[in-house]
Every structure is written in structure tokens, then in C-alpha cells.
Image (cartoon, rainbow, N blue to C red; front, side, top):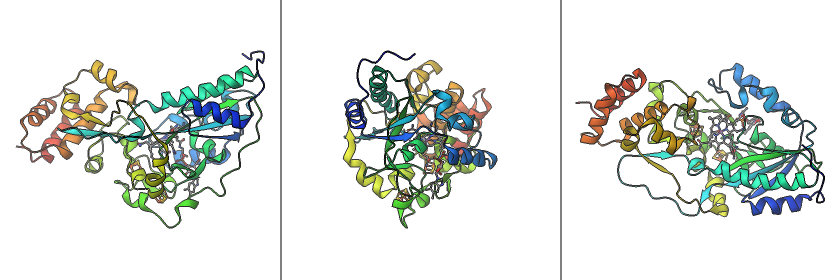
Length: 351
Ligand code: B12
Ligand code: SF4
Ligand code: SF4
């Protein structure tokens, strides 16, 4: 519902200050129009099977590329980017540890929403309607960030924020307020990459199938989230990862160099997960600890599946605790977990 205005419409500079007070590092404005090119890409990639069964923005591309479907009368999209580069790199603890991708070391999306909510409140106080979206299937975040001039698409498909790299989560406020769009990023496709192709070479599974195009069937971020067994040919590439993959960003020179400009405190960063502890935890414990992650069907068996692969890839052979965990899971009533445990056991030279 529209409120009677209690303040003037803030200008973009003021929106930037409001957003910055809520921890948003970069802000830009795009026109609220249909994202036609992205819509075509979503359909084309879905037809080609590159979405690998993902729903998210692929479930309803007409909706996820039309701001007006979420907010009737939307005129502007205020896009915010929040860095997730930690001030202090967490130390890897002793033991068999699985790694978590940086964007998930804490709930950065919740922090981003706090900043965006401040912007939305200011717009509502000026009598406008405003809806906050952050990692929501209702809009394709990278494309509105790109249109708002915040950055360019790297060959790894991430949006690299000008002068700051890609370690950013993105979100936006759809609003009925009218703002002049920010200056667009010139060209914007891999322009800053030049002849570099480090991310393509570094990807452990060859998932970057052409510049800016990811085959989700092979992208470890989705391989570790999706339900079902992990294809055997991808298991070694999983390495020690349990959730997400950072390889195409940690290999990216501008992201690693420029990301240092926006370091922030990440209290209680959850960068590592103790694999044996995970494998002996109950469903309730796992959901309490990791429930903010995207886990298909909120079913903790997929975390256990990933943990078993990490054991097979990284555990010391002959460790009695590892052997006991694998022996237990090889007898598990869940055929996917039993098969994955058997695979891990064989990897470790299976006595
Ligand atoms: C589905 C999804 C995934 C899928 C598929 C990724 C993908 N590339 O589509 C999976 C699970 C694999 C995934 C992985 C990751 N994701 Co994700 N994901 C999403 C989600 C929900 C939708 C993305 C989408 O709609 N893609 C559709 C396709 C069509 O878009 P696209 O790949 O960006 O394609 C564009 C480019 O190809 C470009 N383009 C067109 N022509 C050309 C030509 C050239 C030369 C180039 C370079 C580009 C280019 O235009 C296309 C369309 O706009 C968004 C959140 C949201 N609501 O938007 C987050 C989001 C994209 N993910 C994000 C993150 C952080 C990640 C990971 C880094 C997480 C991790 N560490 O594991 C990885 C990175 C993998 C990668 N290299 O892309 C961030 C990205 C932030 C940023 N700075 O770019 C987002 C925006 C979430 C957020 N709100 O912050 N993700
Ligand atoms: S997230 Fe990992 S698997 Fe996916 S494209 Fe990047 S490097 Fe490849
Ligand atoms: S690694 Fe190189 S090619 Fe890949 S996104 Fe970064 S600059 Fe571009």
C-alpha cells in the first residue's frame, strides 16, 4: 500500500548514502524494463539443457525478466552490491575439513537485504512503492546490475564491479519512483578481460563452455546443490568443497587485486566444515547449522553425500575414524549415500 509522503524523494546521491549506511558498497539505477536479451538466454540455455534442471530464474523466465510482474508500475530498479571479502582470512582448522565458498561464509544476503530495506523505506516515506529483491527468483540480479552500470560480465559470467572485482552479492529495490538510469557500462561483455582466460583454464570441470556461459551440469556450485548422485567423473574435481566453488574468482586477477578495497568484518565466518562431525550429526542438527544454504528439498542427505566425496578425495588413508564413518555409510539404507561411501572407500585404497 502506498503511504502518504512524509519526505521528499531522495536523489541518487542520498540513496547511495542511505545504502552505504546499511553496508552496501556500490549502488546504481536501471530502468525497470523487460530484460529481453536475458529472457532469450534463459530460454536458449534451458532448451540446450545448460540449466541442468535448475528452477530459480529458469522456472518462469517471463517473470524473472520483467520487474513489472513483481511490482506493477515499477519505473526504476535501484541495484546494490555488497562485498564479501573478509578483513581476516579464516584459518583452516586441523582435521578433515571441507571448504565453503566465500559468498556463504556468513549470511551475506541477509546483510544485503538490511541495506536495501533502508533504501526501500526512504522511497516509501516519499510516497512511492518499493519491493526488495536479493537472490530472489523474481529478477535476474546480474543483468540489472549490469544495466545499472555497476560492472561488466567477465568470461566467468560473474559481474565484476568497476574497480572492485566480483566478490559481491547483488540485490535490488524495484520502485515506482522515477530516476535517471546510471550511465551504462560500455559494451560490458568481457571487455575488461582482454586476452585473459584464467578462469576458463582454472575451472576444475571445464564448466565455462564459452565466454560468459556456464554449463550448470558441470558447475560444482550446482553439482553440490542439486539432488541425486554426483556423477562419478566429477567427484575428483569436487576436491574438498562441500558448498559452492570459488575457483573462477580466486583465479581472476582483477577480482583478487581489487577485491581488497572492500574488506569487511565477517564475524564467525563459516569457511570450513568438520567432515566427520557432519557425518555423525542428525538431520535437525544439520539443518540448524546449514539451513540457510540452498539444499535441494532441504534434505540433509545431500550434505552427507558431499561430505562423503570430500572424505574420498582428501582423508588420510587408514584413519580409524574415517574408516568407521565410511563403514557405517556403506551399510546405509540410502542407496545414494551407500554407493558414494563405497566410492570414497575405494578411493582411499579400500581395505
Ligand atoms: C542460477 C544461479 C546460479 C547457477 C547458474 C549460474 C549461471 N551462470 O547462470 C549456479 C548454481 C551454477 C550458480 C553458481 C554461482 N553463483 Co549464482 N545465481 C544464480 C541465480 C539464482 C540466477 C542466475 C541466472 O538467472 N542465470 C541465467 C543466465 C542466463 O545468466 P548468466 O549466466 O548471468 O548469463 C549472462 C551472461 O552470459 C551475459 N552474456 C551474454 N552474452 C555474453 C557474452 C560474453 C562475452 C560475456 C562475457 C557475457 C555475456 O548475459 C547473460 C544473460 O544476462 C542468481 C540470482 C538471481 N536471482 O539472479 C545467482 C547469482 C548469479 N549467483 C551468484 C554467485 C555469487 C554464484 C557463485 C559465485 C557461488 C559460488 N561461489 O559457488 C557461482 C558462480 C558460478 C559462475 N561462474 O557463474 C551471484 C553473482 C554475483 C556476481 N558478482 O556476479 C548471484 C547474482 C546471486 C546474488 N544475488 O548475489 N548460480
Ligand atoms: S564456480 Fe567452479 S565449477 Fe563453476 S564455473 Fe566457476 S570454477 Fe567452474
Ligand atoms: S579470470 Fe580473466 S578472463 Fe576470467 S573473468 Fe577474470 S579477467 Fe576475465
